[in-house]
Amino acid sequence: MSCIFCKIIKGEIPSYKVYEDEYTMVFMDIAKDVDGHMLAIPKKHVINILDCDLETLNHLMATVKKISNYCVDDCEYDGVNILNASGESAGQSVNHFHIHIIPRKDSDNIDGWPEFSGAEQELEEVYEKLKIE
Ligand code: AMP
Ligand code: ZN
Image (cartoon, rainbow, N blue to C red; front, side):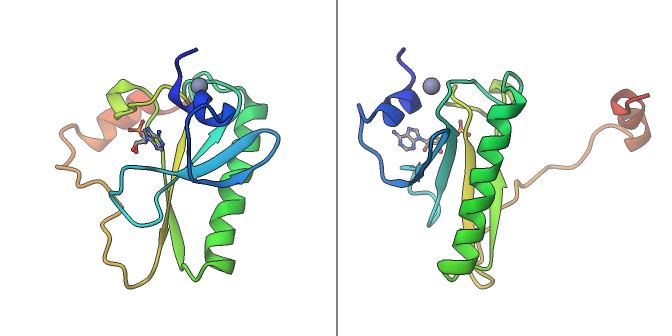
């Protein structure tokens, strides 16, 4: 298996490990794009939320919450951004499910939300397509 995150789990390539339990791991993202950028991953190789079973997702989200609370309760942050790209169309570049955790401070001036260019379709039109009958 040539998955880079599976190799990180197995210790075959180095990482700045923040947290690990039986099912999940959290390590620093090496992008150096924003302070404190972490990735939470399941140890089970699933590609993204679309193929992830609920048990694995539950473990992953429990870890995301644990680290988020830890950031605010113990590391002097005020909040977190939680980001995920599932699928190439969404910008996913590593095909092992990962959730980005970015710790935030009230005064950090980080733009943690994508700069969308404006909706092109009528809201009602998209709603008709998306709503679950
Ligand atoms: P995404 O574009 O949402 O799939 O995010 C993939 C993330 O993985 C990017 O933010 C990369 O910086 C990060 N990344 C890739 N390789 C490594 C690595 N070896 N250690 C830590 N983070 C990595
Ligand atoms: Zn993997």
